[in-house]
Image (cartoon, rainbow, N blue to C red; front, side):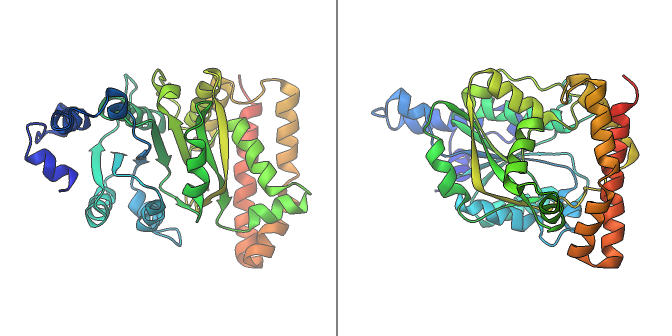
Length: 336
């Protein structure tokens, strides 16, 4: 019998999903029929609960060579039953999730993002909403956040599961391989190891593309609601401050990132938040150095893009990538 069918036939079911602790009541109903199961066994589940935070992801992924369904299909290597979807879309994102979950017998819990006193929903409020739903409604040890624009590579779960029984590990993150070759070519041109760079960037500013979080590591987290970016950095800092180690999955994901070309307003907001929360060193010398380095990056950026995409598309892409770097670094340099 499917999980939701069981609920509908039991007293644990309610038509309003926000009004009941649905897995807790399901477990109470189930274990009332199985009194020989110990409390410790009742509270532990080695399977993760998946979580997605989305906003018009269906439309967003139409700009990529893979679809939202491809993203979901890549999760089938993981033994899980439940998905938390925190969605603030106006497109068909929820429909895609509902149809996919029905086809693959996954239980879907959908919610809008709470705002936690802020004036709008952000990535931080959506992330916090998913965490709160997980903590309040599930007894599982791990929540797995997957971004809407990544595909889990083959072998991701088999490499990951060996870390989940280690009590010292509070966060598991997979390398995010770019779907397009220009970043790899750019770093190779500069003599920088691609994988080593991904790892150092993760520890510098975080990442939640495919991130498992241990329950005990996040049970008291309160992500500042204005962190529309760098909420991943805040989560990493929180887990590390609690004394947990991090495991890195080399199989990783393929990251398509169709919305990489940020606007001036978005880049200003990123710089403002980075300075406000101390995401990067605050010294003037560091900011000048990073700005100067971004200015001189046009040549290797152009080389990498032209080599990867040809002259016409490569020049346009190189300029946009260079513009993003320079504007962000300029905003970091200017103001307080």
